[in-house]
Length: 294
Image (tube, rainbow, N blue to C red):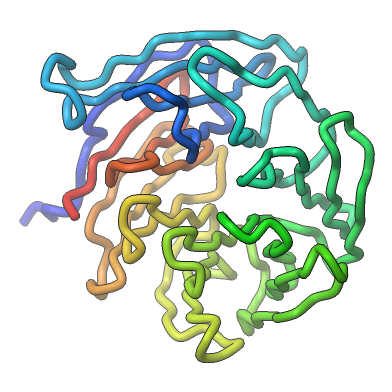
């Protein structure tokens, strides 16, 4: 019997290179289209996406390239500034060896990064270090509160997640996954009491108002965790980037099993659309998009 959760990609867009990372902009870009960026071995491509679910005049997906930035090095992480618009892309570039980085989402005047050197660092847009938090293991993920610019979430490989007050530069809350390694964590920005992560061979979910230990846990391959931006109960996980066949699992907190399963050849990156229940993975010379029924 065929598993009806198994899905091929709803849409695909061809690329000229292997895609290591892909990110939808989480911000309104001043257009009906969505900004999307992806990184390959030598460059970053920035473009717009429009889907038939948004516009009846679009057949499937319409992707238009706006800019190509050549870097000469492999691109492993990307972050969008809230100042990015369809007619204006801020010309600020930070080149650091990091595992993840994120812009402060209200004004976009600072960037937070985490890396294998056991630090979380705050930078200004000129690349000057404004603050540093010493960690006890490599930093794997960092997220900024969507409205309160002094709150920052930092995840460590040893299974601990801390929330920092950037005014006092002190940790104000910590979460303990109870296992290692923590590969990826994400803050649900539509309901900030929810935090999720992939740790060891499980995904785990916290309600930070209830306990410092996870309330839900299920088996999953080690890899990336991302909350949907359209539905606070929807999230996705993937294998660690670079596998020959990377599996995408879409989960709903109301269901004990994944609600959708997909795969991408040598998948890399994972991101959700700003308003649609649609996620994207990179892969071998393509972007693959999956639309999820909510």
